[in-house]
Image (tube, rainbow, N blue to C red; front, top):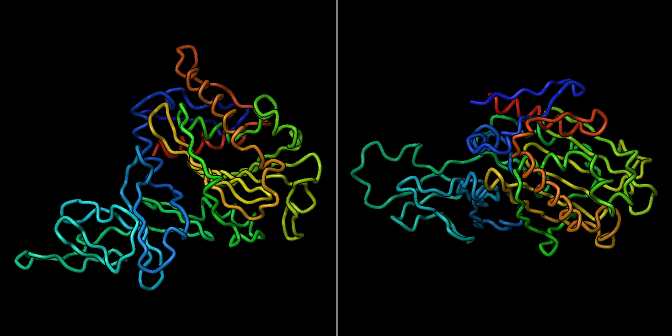
Length: 362
């Protein structure tokens, strides 16, 4: 099994070996080493607005492919459950619905909306039945404002991933952020999921790749803050105070022309706060050389849409796609194995690589 090492001293460090982005076995190892124990965005509470609402989904479709469901029980609590019947493995719910209980359509096994077994026809003669194994597996749920997250193997508390971001934007009226499907997008990118994240994690490329964004952002003042252990922030400061946040005095950024907060949460989530609202970007692995990037838009102030750093996001995405797809072609070369980091501009990428090595070596 491949072992990875990234020197903690960025001035001495080399990047991850190219096989991380090209080796199919490494890609498979990432399933259990990186994605199963980490937290994943699964939507918001509006998916199950009322008691009895059920929303089935696949976690990281085409990769983990784990059938799950979100259910709001009779107490109004939101639960995330395995969507696999404990009898013969049939999917319990195959579409969004409103029910009193969950009933498998194959042989009639029934569960409540907290996942507990209720009944099963033709099972009177079965010994030592039911047991805890007959309940649907109930997963941990982390809720931040209206947003929901879960983990298949919750080894790590969510605070390690989300705390710093939550504190930094605690002044924002997050309850007023409303999902806007017309602004949401799905992009298919011919590049490894980690390459896409690396590109996000450094502003180094902005002057060379994003002319429009560079006209707004003050590149000289672009700053990266490393939150430990599993998140970071790139603070996008504008050249003027136009189209910036109206920050309260309680904000640690008060007095700055903040055009955007670019938060990254390990392993594959970006939370981009603009004066108009939030774009949550989730990078989903598809194959060793492909990923799917989902943009979920939540609008706070419609009057500020298409202005400042939060404007033209589709164009910025297209520019990023072109670059990372070319990098994917390049890292396959026999002449490339590792690179080095800019000490002043690639702290975020170095931090990401250090975490990847930590998880892969466990």
